[in-house]
Structures are given as C-alpha cells and as structure tokens.
Amino acid sequence: MDIIQKARKFAKEEYEKNAPGHQWDHVERVLEKALEIARNLENVDFEALVLAVIFHDISYASYETHVKESIKVAERFLRETGYPRDRIELIKEIMLNHSTPHREKVGDARLIEGKIIYDADKSILITTTEAYEKYYRRLYFDVTKRLVKRQLQNQNP
Image 1 (cartoon, one colour):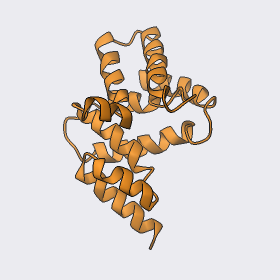
Image 2 (tube, one colour):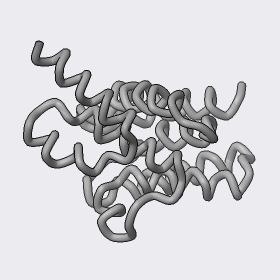
Image 3 (cartoon, one colour):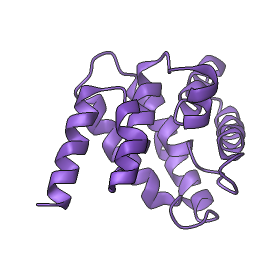
C-alpha cells in the first residue's frame, strides 16, 4: 500500500470525529478541485499536494487551532510510516497555506502546491455573493477564477 492509500485509510476514520462541513466529503471536494487546478499548471508535486489536502482539516475542533492541530496529526502519521523528513516539512508548509489567517499573517504562499490548496479550499466555498466578495479576489490562479465563475453560472443559470 502506498503512502497516499495509507493516508486516505487513516484520514477517513479521523475525519469522522469532525463536525459536518469538515468531514471526509469536504476533503474529497477540495481534492477534486485541487487536482482540476493542478492539471492546468506545470511543475506540481502531486504526491505532496494530495497528502496536504488529505490532512489539511483532519483535526477540526476549532477554527483557531485546526491548522496547527492538523499539522501535528499529519506529521505524527507520516513519521510513523517512515516518510522522509524533508517531504514532511514540505507537506506541513502546504497545509499552512490553506489558512487565510496564516496568509494574512505571513503573506502569500511561496509554493505552487500551497497556492493550489488555498484556491481549492476557498473556491468550493464560493457559492454566495458574500463568499465571492470574501475570497474571489484572493484566489491565486486565473484557472481557479474561471472555474469559480463557471461554478456560479451553473448554480444560477
């Protein structure tokens, strides 16, 4: 079983502990959008992106602490599987990048995968005018903006 399969199996059980809205179906939606965005870009580390998406909200007891707690869970799991330390650090950075407060505190993501996870996580939330106004201008990629506009058009034909 490869690392992504192991992570999925582990994460599915862990996400059951979260409140609705941040369970496994959320991960599947973010992952689908992340892969759709990534396929339109170059030089994407798909394994790191997928692992970061799998773990990004795995410990969601509170909005304020979920990023740090999720990173702890991911790091513990990945270390226990013998995943390389430098790759763990990469995944942790990508996970941090999905957080708007982190972005406001330290600035834009430096990694393409960090930008993708942010766009994927926020774009699935853009279903109302309020969410559009909150997130659309902060999306990194034109491809994401096109996908969001198409999503909104399909919603309101």
